[in-house]
Image (tube, rainbow, N blue to C red; front, side, top):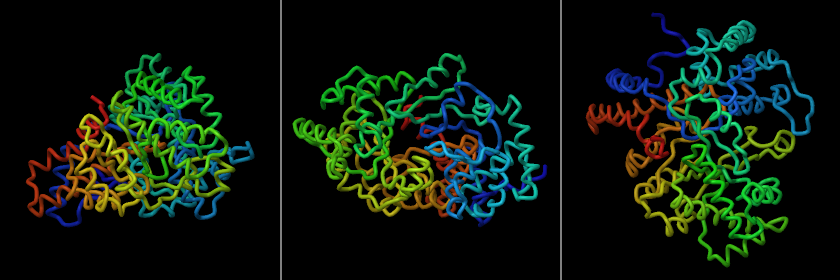
Length: 472
């Protein structure tokens, strides 16, 4: 059978023949394991209503900030890519025009993980064997569009084709979860669960924070003008999210700062941040206290806690005002974990029944801070290479910098953290190949025997995520 040039069977495996052969054998054992996607941002509406994706541009370009941030960096306005404006202003609505513009800039993705993911999707889903260029853009658009009209390309059919065992979406604490309810009522058996993301009501600098607190109280029937009532509102919403399958919460604070204030201090702080506007110092202290409060709640209700610090979100102020959040302008920052997490760890770090998964965009912290912390505290685990580091090089650096101190079993496998549905199997395939390449290196240098490597490959692919995220 002819090999598709877009997806070489040895991609990402070591160049040296002996080690590459070991990686191949490991990969063959785990390539077809089910996908667990315990953290991501796909739209639950897709699975609730199972409608056809409208066109190739809407499927691949419009929802993927990896794509449009790269084009924007080369001077392509977001309006020309069909990204909606907050003010309802004019944007390109012709999907074929968006696709052609994408094709004209395809060369920008050479050597990037985005190129790997797109090549994989084009080859495995749409039987495309050629690189996208302006000359074939219309023809490839037509091929993809024709496939998208078929029932086998509806969201639920792709979910099953991708061999997804479970996928978690991420919703605000204020979300009514009506799409998850629609999934439940539909009778479809695909496992789509939610994740509790309370940033809109835990971050005083989040837009609309004060009105969000009012809405929070209305949803829960709690008095969110008092500290005790506010905490009770979180407890109620966490239980509500659990009723729709949630096994985790997620916290996207800019830093990893935590605090452990007395009840009186916390009450006074809460009253200050309820005044408009809160000072920057009070906003940071409140976010820090809320990480600790969420950890205490996790000890009670069992939700796994994910902390995603280290990103200055919406760095491009003009773009934020025009298009809103999550438009590719989030920039990594240096992050402290050792001092920042100590108040929380002093309180709950030694609890073996608590799982706190730490992510970072600051790779300098892997060996210096995160691996030693996770290699000691029972409550801590390391999340995989994330966001800008969701790449061959980033995953390799993660393994090289953390394994010697934290080992493999203080990590949690892989999660794709994506809004782009068709990239899910591609991203998991990259992670599986990278782990097999890393393990093959350990076998080839006689630091691990091959039988152990087979078991480890399965753990890294499937078992660790299932255990860490309580997906049994």
